[in-house]
Every structure is written in C-alpha cells, then in structure tokens.
Length: 80
Image 1 (cartoon, rainbow, N blue to C red):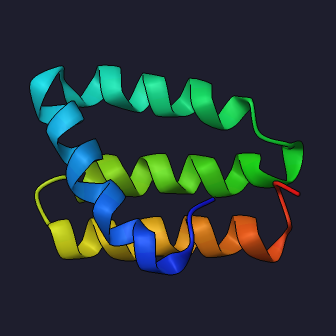
Image 2 (cartoon, rainbow, N blue to C red):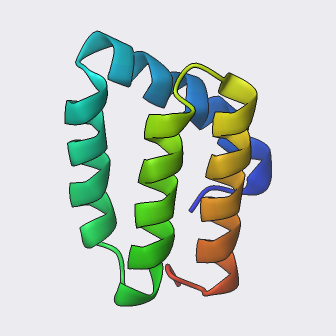
C-alpha cells in the first residue's frame, strides 16, 4: 500500500509489465498478489485488477484506479 504520492510511479511499471508479458499474465500475477493480502482487501484487489484490464491503454485512468485501491487499503489498515 503505497503512499498516494508514489502510486503514479507504480502504474507505468505495471503497464510495461503487462505489455512485456501480456495483460492476462499480469492480471494473474496481480490476482495472486492480492490473495496474499488480508481478506478485507480482496474485493478492492478484484476491482483494481478489473480496472487495470479495462484501462490498460489510458495511464491517467490506471493511476486513478491504483489510487482508489491504495487508498482503500490504507483506510482499512490492510498492512500495519
């Protein structure tokens, strides 16, 4: 759960990963990663992955979706 100021640096990395491998493999990797989070974050993770798949070509929208996911995890204190 990145501080809000760092989220915009994460999105280009995820975008490059999805383009280098493929969007389905990237989504599977992200899905596996979110399953390791506490149960409170699973639905937010599912929404983030869906947003990533739908908005892969719009970096501004990806940043917004990442901000929403990160904010939800911070709000729920997913990682202490």
